[in-house]
Amino acid sequence: MIQTIFKIAIGHLVGRARQTVTTLVGVSVSTMVLITTISLMRGLVDSFTESIVDIAPHIVVRGESIIPDKIDLISNDKGTRRAFVVDNVQEEDPEEITNYRQILSLMEEAPYDEAISVASPYVSSQVMAIKGTANQPIEVNGVLIDRENKVAKIESNLKSGSLESLQKTPNGLLLGEKIAEDLEIQLFDELTLVASSGVTVRAKVVGTFFTGVKSIDNKAFVNLKVGQLLEEMPPNKVTGINLRVKDLLQNTELARELERVTGYKCETWQEANDSIIGLFNRIGNIVYSLVGFVALVSGFGVANILVTTIYEKTRDIAIMKSYGFTSNQIVALFVLEGVLVGLAGALLGAILAIGSTNLLASLPTESAQGPVVRKGFAMSQSPIYYLITIGLTVFISTVAAMIPSRKAAKLQPVQVLRDANL
Image: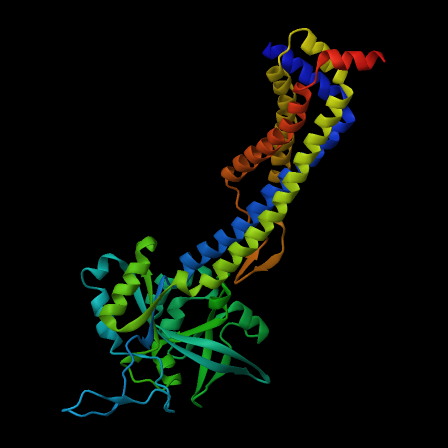
């Protein structure tokens, strides 16, 4: 009986070849669009996350005290009431970490050495870079380049020059490739850095780099002493400390523990990029919803072909029931037709999606995808997206086939044949 039902289902679909092909095209296109969109959105989020995890610090210890001191203006030993000035106008303390070497030593001792791979102190400075008549505001980070390289993997992203040149050149400068292009700077050119404090430093470009992460590529790196000079900091102070941890899943707990022992604010990469990741997810949800409507439309296409088939095959259905076909077998017949159309369209759409995702990934264009710059589009090629989409398409097609098939099962053969003879 199963073989008979299958042959009848194939006969119905082949008998209405034009409508069947039209429906298959609709289902396959919606499947291709759904898979391509999911691959693009997930590829964007995954690319950003991988870039941040691979290049950016996992935790940043900032020179911001988490326990601000309150000023006790009035104190009476015999009394219990005290007054505090809340909105007094005063100069803000600069965000800096004092005696940073003690914190570095702490992180290299147990138990923190088991969780932290490397700690890199830095001094951040906003300066005006000047070369001839060209100038541009940039962020300069004074670092210990051997430590910072283990955090940001600068050496693997160098386009010219070397880290050794920076170590051997006291006034050396590693410059982001985009900044170098904007200022038309070549290797070994010199430029003037003017800090907000008025300090001026003559720097020599010893290398350029490109990581694909805008927040890093828009920076320049100098030796730590030069950074301290620009910010007029003593040797025992830095702006912050970049950390690379061994277990990303435990970095939030580690950050809270470091805040407790150091007294300085510690920010994880998830916290620093929470708004961007949240924005990606919201955009993704909107796109998935829109594409979901496309899938529903393809389901209506499947329902349409079955409704038409039932309308035209009413007499045949009555004859089949007269020969002993049960209502459940009639339902199974038309549900099978919906499954065949949905499955064939989904498989064809998956094949088309492989081509579309590979095409987008291979486009020789530089795209700025949020805070990440890539050559071509970041596409996720996970097989699970294909399986989920194919399963969803077949499910929608099956549900769409249920309604007209139940209508067909309710037909009374005697009434249908009597009406056909009138």
